[in-house]
Amino acid sequence: MSQENRHYVFYILLLLLLGITPVRAGTIQVCPDCDVKSIQHGINIAQERDTLIIKEGVYAEFNILINKPLTLLGQNYPVVDGNEKGEVFRIVSDGVRIEGLFIINVGVSYTSDHAAIRVVRSKDFQIVNNRFENLFFGIFLEKSSHGVVDSNQILGIARDEYNSGNGIHLWYSNNILVKDNNIEGVRDGIYLEFADTIRIRGNQSRKNLRYGLHFMFSNDNIYSDNLFENNGAGVAVMFSKKIRMTGNRFRKNWGPAAYGMLLKEINDAEITGNLFEENTVGINIEGSNRITYRGNNFVSNGWAIRVLGACYSNAFSRNNFLHNSFDLSYNSNVNDNSFEGNYWSSYSGYDLDKNGVGDVPHRPVKLFSYIVNRTPETLILLRSLFMDLIDFSERVSPVFTPDNLVDSQPQMRLIQ
Image 1: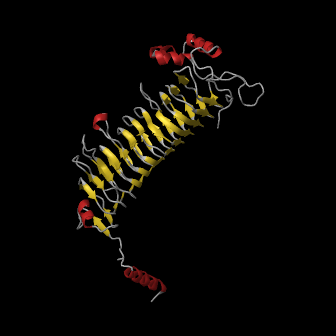
Image 2 (image 1 turned 90 degrees about the vertical axis):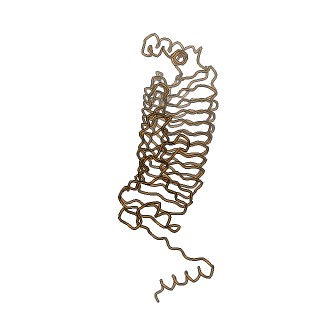
Image 3 (image 1 turned 90 degrees about the horizontal axis):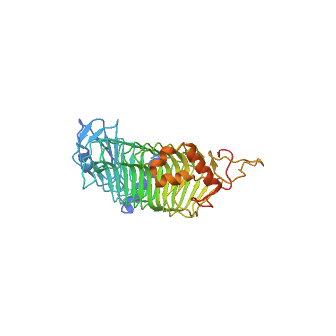
């Protein structure tokens, strides 16, 4: 007997002495011409930790229940067609992996929130490299934890908010990694509610009816290197704390009530190294405190930053403000926030000592932005000489804007 075989026999004997029966994961083939023709049948006969190989074909099934640890692996993206009759997959077990399926035609329900894949009270799950089309909700995580949602393609056809769902939806879930997914044409691309310790990285959320990302009451989360582009209203971040948003791109979110990002009741957060480009409003801030804004680029927005009130102890440093119609809008004559060492393309001061810092402090708030906040119709005068004269007079002798709202160290060159 070889040394390798001796080790194996010893391992089996040890397990038997301990009263443990060794388990070997098996494989079940599912296809229209196989003995197992339906996915649900394959799940029913499978042992724990088996793998179902689902071969190419069309499987007209819905309300598929996965109640044991299994791997479902599609070959050449077999189509699982829910025929708009209900939910397609429901996972109620730990240790489930679904990979390589093409799931279509999820049923619409206004009471049950039908999803292509719903994970309920489970952990250690993986939803990887699947495709979703004609869905209500795409991936719905409910009271689940320690899972991965990776490299899925979600394409919806949402036309109205009331009869459409979200691409990736997390509710009362924690310790989830959501990465490298492409989401388009749903209500909210990614939605979180009461979801803590979430990592959202490298996703692309485009052309969604409402928000590219929307979360509330969700703390200790990190959002990095995502693209949120051409969504109805951009990204909404509300009633949360200890958030890090870094390296994201917020682009082309245009509309009368659109913005790159809305912050409402956010505290103790970091917003660093992001790009806000060609949005109606780059960041719309209300009731948010102790936030660090550093190293961001605000490029060609209507308003780069609009502060609506009740915002205290925020620090804006080393940001670039490039060719925005308004760099900063402020609706209060009291300022408790700091603006230090930013680059402003609208800065008209000088640097006589050549140290790279402007010798004249910069006042980023134009009086005209103050007027537009109160009378939006005056926006048609944006490029008029009269408005330029008003803004100049306010910079020289501020009356309506806070005296201390200045950048005392404006940078003369673009910050790299």
